[in-house]
Length: 264
Image 1 (cartoon, rainbow, N blue to C red):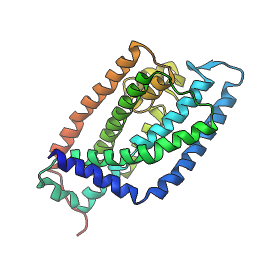
Image 2: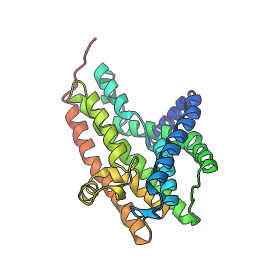
Image 3: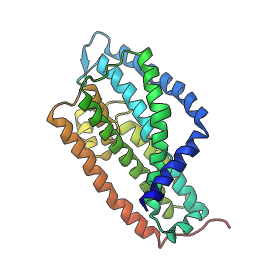
Protein backbone atom coordinates (compact mmCIF):
# COMPACT_ATOMS: atom_id res chain seq x y z
CA UNK A 1 0.00 0.00 0.00
CA UNK A 2 2.91 2.34 0.73
CA UNK A 3 4.17 1.91 -2.81
CA UNK A 4 0.72 2.92 -4.12
CA UNK A 5 0.79 6.15 -2.12
CA UNK A 6 4.35 6.86 -3.33
CA UNK A 7 3.10 6.38 -6.88
CA UNK A 8 0.38 8.98 -6.19
CA UNK A 9 3.09 11.45 -5.15
CA UNK A 10 5.10 10.67 -8.29
CA UNK A 11 2.13 11.03 -10.63
CA UNK A 12 1.13 14.41 -9.17
CA UNK A 13 4.75 15.59 -9.46
CA UNK A 14 4.85 14.57 -13.14
CA UNK A 15 1.49 16.23 -13.77
CA UNK A 16 2.76 19.49 -12.31
CA UNK A 17 5.96 19.14 -14.36
CA UNK A 18 3.87 19.31 -17.53
CA UNK A 19 2.84 22.86 -16.59
CA UNK A 20 6.17 24.03 -15.18
CA UNK A 21 6.26 27.20 -17.33
CA UNK A 22 3.42 28.58 -15.19
CA UNK A 23 5.63 28.23 -12.12
CA UNK A 24 8.61 29.92 -13.72
CA UNK A 25 6.41 32.95 -14.36
CA UNK A 26 5.10 32.56 -10.82
CA UNK A 27 8.61 33.17 -9.49
CA UNK A 28 8.54 36.63 -11.06
CA UNK A 29 5.08 37.34 -9.62
CA UNK A 30 6.15 36.27 -6.12
CA UNK A 31 9.32 38.36 -6.47
CA UNK A 32 7.19 41.42 -7.26
CA UNK A 33 5.01 40.69 -4.20
CA UNK A 34 8.02 40.33 -1.93
CA UNK A 35 9.66 43.46 -3.38
CA UNK A 36 6.47 45.47 -2.82
CA UNK A 37 6.24 44.36 0.81
CA UNK A 38 9.93 45.13 1.31
CA UNK A 39 9.56 48.76 0.25
CA UNK A 40 6.31 49.14 2.22
CA UNK A 41 7.96 47.89 5.42
CA UNK A 42 11.09 49.93 4.71
CA UNK A 43 8.89 53.05 4.67
CA UNK A 44 7.05 51.91 7.82
CA UNK A 45 10.30 51.36 9.73
CA UNK A 46 11.80 54.71 8.75
CA UNK A 47 14.33 55.51 11.46
CA UNK A 48 13.01 52.86 13.86
CA UNK A 49 15.40 49.98 14.50
CA UNK A 50 12.86 47.41 15.72
CA UNK A 51 9.10 47.00 15.29
CA UNK A 52 7.20 44.03 16.66
CA UNK A 53 10.45 42.42 17.80
CA UNK A 54 11.89 42.39 14.26
CA UNK A 55 14.63 44.52 12.74
CA UNK A 56 14.24 45.65 9.12
CA UNK A 57 16.72 42.96 8.07
CA UNK A 58 14.74 40.29 9.90
CA UNK A 59 11.52 41.68 8.46
CA UNK A 60 12.92 41.45 4.92
CA UNK A 61 13.92 37.83 5.53
CA UNK A 62 10.55 37.11 7.15
CA UNK A 63 8.62 38.43 4.13
CA UNK A 64 10.79 36.50 1.65
CA UNK A 65 10.78 33.19 3.51
CA UNK A 66 7.04 33.45 4.27
CA UNK A 67 6.03 33.92 0.65
CA UNK A 68 8.43 31.29 -0.64
CA UNK A 69 7.26 28.92 2.08
CA UNK A 70 3.70 29.51 0.88
CA UNK A 71 4.76 28.32 -2.56
CA UNK A 72 5.51 24.93 -0.96
CA UNK A 73 2.49 24.45 1.29
CA UNK A 74 -0.13 26.01 -1.01
CA UNK A 75 -2.51 23.71 -2.90
CA UNK A 76 -6.04 23.64 -4.27
CA UNK A 77 -7.15 20.37 -2.71
CA UNK A 78 -10.26 22.03 -1.28
CA UNK A 79 -11.46 22.92 -4.78
CA UNK A 80 -10.52 19.50 -6.16
CA UNK A 81 -12.45 17.70 -3.43
CA UNK A 82 -15.47 19.99 -3.76
CA UNK A 83 -15.51 19.48 -7.55
CA UNK A 84 -15.35 15.69 -7.21
CA UNK A 85 -18.18 15.77 -4.68
CA UNK A 86 -20.39 17.97 -6.85
CA UNK A 87 -19.96 15.88 -10.01
CA UNK A 88 -20.32 12.61 -8.10
CA UNK A 89 -16.94 11.15 -9.11
CA UNK A 90 -16.08 10.84 -5.42
CA UNK A 91 -18.60 7.96 -5.18
CA UNK A 92 -16.12 5.51 -6.70
CA UNK A 93 -13.64 6.41 -3.94
CA UNK A 94 -15.83 4.68 -1.37
CA UNK A 95 -15.16 1.25 -2.88
CA UNK A 96 -11.49 1.61 -3.76
CA UNK A 97 -8.90 -0.10 -1.52
CA UNK A 98 -7.31 3.08 -0.22
CA UNK A 99 -8.16 6.04 1.95
CA UNK A 100 -9.48 8.91 -0.17
CA UNK A 101 -8.40 11.61 2.28
CA UNK A 102 -4.88 10.19 2.55
CA UNK A 103 -4.60 9.98 -1.24
CA UNK A 104 -5.52 13.66 -1.48
CA UNK A 105 -2.85 14.51 1.05
CA UNK A 106 -0.27 12.53 -0.97
CA UNK A 107 -1.33 14.39 -4.12
CA UNK A 108 -0.79 17.65 -2.26
CA UNK A 109 2.64 16.41 -1.17
CA UNK A 110 3.58 15.59 -4.76
CA UNK A 111 2.61 19.11 -5.74
CA UNK A 112 4.50 20.52 -2.77
CA UNK A 113 7.70 18.65 -3.66
CA UNK A 114 7.44 20.00 -7.20
CA UNK A 115 6.97 23.55 -5.92
CA UNK A 116 9.88 23.16 -3.47
CA UNK A 117 12.30 22.05 -6.19
CA UNK A 118 11.19 24.20 -9.13
CA UNK A 119 9.61 27.22 -7.43
CA UNK A 120 10.66 27.82 -3.84
CA UNK A 121 14.39 27.03 -4.18
CA UNK A 122 15.12 28.98 -7.41
CA UNK A 123 12.74 31.73 -6.28
CA UNK A 124 14.58 32.14 -2.98
CA UNK A 125 17.92 32.36 -4.80
CA UNK A 126 16.47 34.99 -7.15
CA UNK A 127 15.13 37.06 -4.25
CA UNK A 128 18.43 36.73 -2.36
CA UNK A 129 20.20 38.36 -5.31
CA UNK A 130 17.82 41.35 -5.14
CA UNK A 131 17.15 41.95 -1.44
CA UNK A 132 19.30 41.94 1.75
CA UNK A 133 18.10 38.60 3.11
CA UNK A 134 19.80 37.24 6.23
CA UNK A 135 20.13 33.45 6.11
CA UNK A 136 20.82 31.57 9.38
CA UNK A 137 24.35 30.18 9.68
CA UNK A 138 23.44 27.32 12.05
CA UNK A 139 22.79 24.12 9.99
CA UNK A 140 20.53 22.72 12.73
CA UNK A 141 18.26 25.75 12.35
CA UNK A 142 17.80 24.90 8.68
CA UNK A 143 16.82 21.35 9.62
CA UNK A 144 14.30 22.59 12.20
CA UNK A 145 12.88 25.08 9.70
CA UNK A 146 12.28 22.42 7.04
CA UNK A 147 10.61 20.17 9.63
CA UNK A 148 8.35 23.06 10.62
CA UNK A 149 7.70 23.89 6.95
CA UNK A 150 6.59 20.28 6.36
CA UNK A 151 4.22 20.57 9.33
CA UNK A 152 2.95 23.83 7.79
CA UNK A 153 2.11 21.87 4.66
CA UNK A 154 0.29 19.20 6.69
CA UNK A 155 -1.78 21.72 8.67
CA UNK A 156 -2.67 23.82 5.61
CA UNK A 157 -3.61 20.67 3.69
CA UNK A 158 -5.79 19.51 6.58
CA UNK A 159 -7.66 22.81 6.55
CA UNK A 160 -8.12 22.48 2.78
CA UNK A 161 -9.46 18.94 3.16
CA UNK A 162 -11.88 20.02 5.88
CA UNK A 163 -13.12 22.90 3.72
CA UNK A 164 -13.46 20.65 0.69
CA UNK A 165 -15.39 17.96 2.58
CA UNK A 166 -17.99 20.53 3.57
CA UNK A 167 -19.23 20.23 -0.03
CA UNK A 168 -20.99 17.07 1.20
CA UNK A 169 -23.17 19.24 3.45
CA UNK A 170 -23.36 22.46 1.38
CA UNK A 171 -24.47 22.44 -2.22
CA UNK A 172 -21.97 25.20 -2.92
CA UNK A 173 -19.07 25.82 -0.55
CA UNK A 174 -17.34 28.39 -2.77
CA UNK A 175 -17.85 31.14 -0.19
CA UNK A 176 -16.41 28.95 2.55
CA UNK A 177 -13.33 28.22 0.46
CA UNK A 178 -12.78 31.90 -0.28
CA UNK A 179 -13.16 32.78 3.40
CA UNK A 180 -10.71 30.05 4.38
CA UNK A 181 -8.10 31.30 1.90
CA UNK A 182 -8.34 34.90 3.15
CA UNK A 183 -8.20 33.71 6.77
CA UNK A 184 -5.09 31.62 6.15
CA UNK A 185 -3.21 34.42 4.35
CA UNK A 186 -4.17 37.08 6.91
CA UNK A 187 -4.18 35.22 10.23
CA UNK A 188 -1.19 32.96 9.52
CA UNK A 189 1.15 35.96 9.49
CA UNK A 190 1.81 35.89 5.76
CA UNK A 191 0.59 39.44 5.11
CA UNK A 192 1.26 40.86 8.59
CA UNK A 193 3.43 39.10 11.22
CA UNK A 194 1.47 37.98 14.28
CA UNK A 195 3.75 40.09 16.49
CA UNK A 196 2.42 43.22 14.69
CA UNK A 197 -1.18 42.57 15.75
CA UNK A 198 -2.67 44.37 18.79
CA UNK A 199 -2.32 42.53 22.09
CA UNK A 200 -5.90 41.23 22.33
CA UNK A 201 -6.01 39.95 18.73
CA UNK A 202 -2.56 38.40 19.06
CA UNK A 203 -3.82 36.42 22.06
CA UNK A 204 -6.81 35.20 20.04
CA UNK A 205 -4.67 34.17 17.05
CA UNK A 206 -2.38 32.14 19.31
CA UNK A 207 -5.36 29.85 20.01
CA UNK A 208 -6.00 29.26 16.30
CA UNK A 209 -4.11 26.92 13.93
CA UNK A 210 -3.26 29.62 11.38
CA UNK A 211 -0.06 30.85 13.05
CA UNK A 212 1.36 27.32 12.78
CA UNK A 213 1.27 27.62 8.98
CA UNK A 214 3.45 30.68 8.35
CA UNK A 215 4.38 32.71 11.41
CA UNK A 216 6.02 30.05 13.59
CA UNK A 217 8.44 28.58 11.00
CA UNK A 218 9.27 32.03 9.57
CA UNK A 219 9.86 33.49 13.05
CA UNK A 220 12.24 30.63 13.84
CA UNK A 221 14.08 31.12 10.54
CA UNK A 222 14.58 34.85 11.14
CA UNK A 223 15.68 34.44 14.77
CA UNK A 224 12.54 36.01 16.26
CA UNK A 225 11.98 32.75 18.14
CA UNK A 226 15.10 31.20 19.70
CA UNK A 227 16.25 28.66 22.28
CA UNK A 228 13.78 26.29 23.91
CA UNK A 229 10.90 28.34 22.49
CA UNK A 230 11.70 26.79 19.10
CA UNK A 231 10.78 23.31 20.33
CA UNK A 232 7.74 24.64 22.17
CA UNK A 233 6.43 26.11 18.93
CA UNK A 234 7.33 22.96 17.05
CA UNK A 235 5.15 21.18 19.61
CA UNK A 236 2.33 23.63 18.84
CA UNK A 237 2.47 22.59 15.19
CA UNK A 238 2.43 18.88 16.06
CA UNK A 239 -0.51 19.46 18.42
CA UNK A 240 -2.56 21.22 15.74
CA UNK A 241 -1.76 18.47 13.24
CA UNK A 242 -3.14 15.88 15.68
CA UNK A 243 -6.17 17.99 16.61
CA UNK A 244 -7.18 18.57 12.99
CA UNK A 245 -7.28 14.82 12.33
CA UNK A 246 -10.46 14.68 14.43
CA UNK A 247 -12.73 16.95 12.31
CA UNK A 248 -11.40 15.31 9.13
CA UNK A 249 -12.32 11.86 10.45
CA UNK A 250 -15.75 13.01 11.63
CA UNK A 251 -16.54 14.77 8.33
CA UNK A 252 -15.42 11.77 6.27
CA UNK A 253 -17.52 9.32 8.30
CA UNK A 254 -20.58 11.60 8.19
CA UNK A 255 -20.12 12.29 4.49
CA UNK A 256 -20.73 8.65 3.59
CA UNK A 257 -24.40 9.17 4.42
CA UNK A 258 -24.65 12.54 2.67
CA UNK A 259 -23.53 11.84 -0.90
CA UNK A 260 -25.84 13.06 -3.65
CA UNK A 261 -25.02 13.87 -7.26
CA UNK A 262 -26.04 17.11 -8.94
CA UNK A 263 -26.66 16.76 -12.66
CA UNK A 264 -26.39 13.50 -14.53
